[in-house]
Amino acid sequence: MKSWIRTVLFLALSITFCGCSKSGETGKTTASNEAKKERSKSDKDERQERAARIRPAVPVKASEVDEGTITSSLVFDSVLETESSVEIFAETSGLILEVHVEEGDRVVAGQILALMENVEEGVDAEEAEARYEHQKANFKRTKDLYGRKLINQQEYDNAKFDLEQMRLRFERAKIQLENTIVRSTVSGVVTGRNAQAGRRVATNRVLFSIMNLDELFANVNIPGQHMLSIEEGLPAVIDSDLIEGVRYDAFVKLVSPIVDPESGTFKAKVAVSKLNGMPIYPGMFVNVRVIVDTSDDAVLIPKEAIVHEGDLKYIFKVQNGKAKKTLLQEGYSNVGFVQATSDIVKGDLVIVMGHSALKDGANVKIVKEAVAAEQGTTNSSDAGQG
Image 1 (cartoon, rainbow, N blue to C red):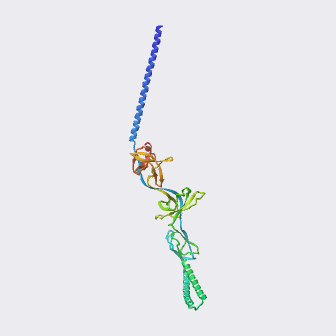
Image 2: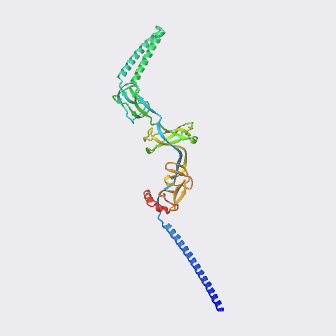
Image 3: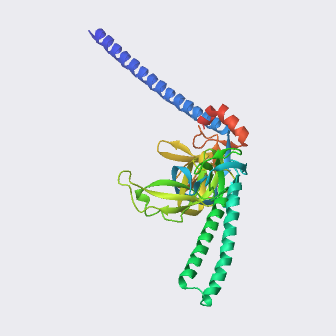
């Protein structure tokens, strides 16, 4: 009996000892695995940090921020018109002898455009002048007789009336003769020529069309909410897509005081101040920019530096060889620049090329435009890792 009890106690103690031994070994294994994981994570972080330090810089083109003047303006599409466009008619019928101008020629008011046959009109004018001079001599004698009381009042009045009639006939003959000379009634450019030497024309036939290109304007329809800010004399700029890079100074000449109830707009006439030697003609489609406000010493950001992310706009500044992503708070804008109102100052370098896939903190290297354009395309994947 005692032998059996000893055997059972021995087996129980053995099982207990084995369990404790296995538990200790499991604990040691778990601790060892945790230590390995920590060393692996530390090695990975070190490798990533080392890779970040040696990652090649992304080639970019940068521009230095400057200050300048920028305007707030309203832009409209319109068609250029002229204040003066006239047609020159034949004042008399007859044969055209000479044509002195061609389409595109500039003319001044009173300039001779064409000559018509005038032999008959010339003879009539000479005859009328002779009769008038004869009548003047007769009236002089009649007046002398009247002064000496040798003729009565009726004879004197009849002589005076005859003289006036002869004068009017002479004036009419001169007008008929003058009508054979076709003259320009305005200064401008000949835009149409229907006159041809050797052609017989009738009275009131259109011979020439002339436009005054020194008085060009464009009508624009402005939303009613801007009525208080639009006034006569405001500066403006007119340009056309047909003549790239050429702009014309203009001004608001007239402002209508009536708002169209259907469109909610009012009309304004914007006139070209002066031509700059480049061609611009009535009928051309133009862009009209009415300047309503001006900001001096504004911080100007080139539009090519802007990166759009949804409704937000960013720019990348270059600081210590790295790209710093900066939110753009903008004010006025024009064709090439945007006014920055915060976080950007004069002298900052902003990236204008090579930033399409750039990330905040990426290493960058400023290069020339041609290199940036080429490398920015081929290395866009590298830029995404910055």
